[in-house]
Each structure stands twice: as C-alpha cells, then as structure tokens.
Image 1 (cartoon, rainbow, N blue to C red):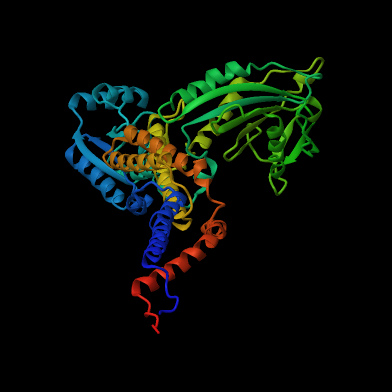
Image 2 (cartoon, one colour):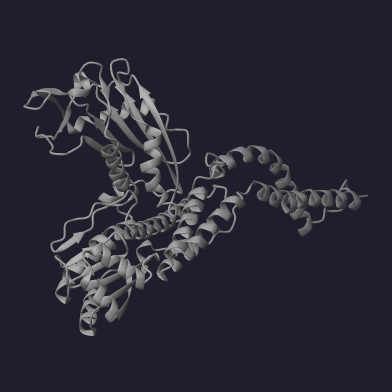
Length: 528
C-alpha cells in the first residue's frame, strides 16, 4: 500500500500545458504586441546628410567679362581682379577677357556721356542676363571707375585696377555681406533687414491725430501703387508682395518735445530726443491692423504732426540737432516712420496739409531698400556711383540681393535641419510622422540642389531651390505633431503600464517556476 502521492500524470500534464500556454501567450505574443503598439512612430531620416551640411562651404559662381582696348590692359585688369578674389571663399569669379572692337572703341571714346556709352555697350553685348557683369575700358572718364545702374562699370585705364577691385568687392558683389549671410553670426546688415520669407505684406499707414483741426490731402493708395508698387515689381523674382494702405485717426502721441526758439518762419521748433521716437511704434502697433496677412509685415507710417506741435526736429543723445532734410527714422525688422511737418503757411486760416508725395515716398523707398537687404554703399575714392534715376533698384543690386537671399535661405535651412536632428536625437519620444519626413527629405534635396546650382552660377534656379528648402525646413520644424508625446516621456509610460501588468505577472512567474521544476523533474516519493 502506497501513501497518497502526486496527482495522476494526466492531470499534471494538463495543468503544466495550461501554464505553459498562458506564459507563452503572454510573453511571446502579449509583451511584443504591447511594446509595438506603444512605441513612438519615427520615419527614417537622412541624418548623415543633415550632419554633413556646412553653411561656410556655400559658394556663388559668377561671370565677369573684362573689355579693354588692348591685350596688356585686359590681362593686367583681369589678373589683379583674379588675384584679389582668390582669397574670397564666398564668391568665385569666372573671368573672361575680350578686346573691344575698333567700332565700339571709337563709339565709347566719342560719345558725350556715360549714359550714351552704356547704350553702345548694350548694343554689342547682352547685359540683361542675371549673374553677369562687364567692366569696360573708356578713356574719357573724369573718375577712375564709373558704375552704372546696369551690369556695367567703366574704367579709365590699367591704373584704375585697385579702384575697380574695391568697386567690385564693396559695391557690386558686397563680399562682406555675403559672408555674413551664410554665417551663424548676425552682422549689422542682417540685424536690419527682414528675415527670409516667400513674401511680405507692405502697409502704408497715414496717422492723423487731429482730423478735426486740420485737413490732410494725401492719396495713400495711389502713392503706394505709383512708388512702392513700381519698386516691388522689380523684386518679383525674390518675393511676393501684397500692398495695402490705411488711415489711423485720433492716435495722438506725446513726443515729450521741448520748444526751442529759432529764426525760421515759425520762430520756433520742437526738439525730440532720438531715443524717444521708438516709443511711437508701440502706439502704432496697438492700432495698426497689420495682422490681415500671414506674411511678415513691413510697416511704413506717415505721422502728421498737428500745427501746435510743428515743426518737430530730431536731436541726438548729446542734444544736438541732427542735420537731415527729412524727419524720419527706421526700426529694424519693423519698418519706417516719416514725421510730416506742415509748413507755417499751411497752418494759417483753415489748416490744410499737402505733403510732398515725392519726398515722402522717396524716403519710404530708401527705408524699404534697407529693410529688404539693399544696403547703402560706402564712399570709394576715385569711383563714382551713378545715382538712382528711378524707383526700381539697380540691376546689379538685384543680382546681389538674389545671391544674398539664396545664401541666407540655404544657410538658414541647414541650421534648422541640424537643430531639428539634434532635438530628435535628444528626445526619443518625439513622433516623426510621414508628413514631417516628407518635409525634411524635401528640404535636404532642395538644399543640395540649391548649393549645386549656386556653385555653377545658376542664380535664379538656386534661389528658387533655396526658397523651397527654407519653406520645407520651417514646415518640418513647426509641425504640431512633433509635440504629440513631448509631455509623455518614457518614465511616465512605465509608471502607467507597470501597475497594470504587475498583478498579472505574479501568477505568470509562479506558473513559470512550477513549469521549470516540472520539466526538470522532481524526486520520486518514498513507497512503504
């Protein structure tokens, strides 16, 4: 007779197989399924290409044609330019030397002025092509170098070489500004101009604080169309512009000006410190309806001073009057303000202010040039810059602006993608969905295409690629889905799921223990 022993083998086999099935389903199927369904979705991204981007390696290739009366002069001019520009890392000149034909040389030496000489050059060579420039010898010059509004500069002889090099570096190509465009460090020019964008919304505001005491005759809409419209039409290859105008009434601002006696027709003027002018912008921001467009807004404001506060004169920090023909100021990345001072005669009887439209809009054009990236040109001894004779920018200024914006947008796109890649690497629970992946891949492809086209001299195509790259990079970086799990890190995920799975795991572990003992086999019970 034996003692009561183990359960029959059939029952024990059934119990062990049931435990093994439960453990297998939970560990082999349940845990992987849970892990898969809770993982963060991430599209594969070209991290190697993004990390290899180098804004300092971006370079512009451009064509320069030297036209001289003889071979020695052409070689000397071209050699000196080439030698000086070898040190420039942002621009590469493809220099071509040509000898001026007898017919053209005779025409250049016999015409009365440079404007006629420019027409002669345009009749023989194509000066309308982007990213090209011609330096042409013309002996009857009063200066060493004469720079036109077209893609042509005249030089007198070989002795003008040093001056010509400085004109090319500081005026035509603006190498220092191009270097700053691709750099991560903001220079003075970048701090003034608006950031790169596909387009801008330009708003002209006429601010009339006292409409009850003075009438203002100014057609803001027509002025915008005639002046600002003509200017931005020439920049259509760079940006899309929308123009609008508005009148702001009863926006009275206390300039805290001090009355100063003088010998003018008024017998006095009001002095305002330059550092107080920008307080006016806060008042304008409160009332100006500039949020009607998703594009960045460039503000141009004409502030009409009441007769009892006119004329207003701007003083510097040392309380010295600033000698300027107009009273105006500009705020970087915001816009410009023109202070409209009525004449003493306009304030007699029934006050009526008739501003000089040409002077006001000319001031706004000068401010708009700086805000968009066309800088003032420094003085170069021996060189003469032909003054602007119309509202549109000079042709070579347009090329320079195209190069500037292309470099800026490519460098900005590279920096945006590098920052995003670093962020994604540091925070593992950021979701990278298909839309973000498409934007990033499109930005990478556009950056590579833009850099290649810029290096080959295809300036317009490079600019279009840089715009696509900038737009795609900004879209990816600002994608709202990146924030979906930003506030749900891994430690919180485990804190939520462990209390759910831990009670289930105790019987599973015990069953697994018994199952292991059973598989190894227990010692047999003793028999009486």
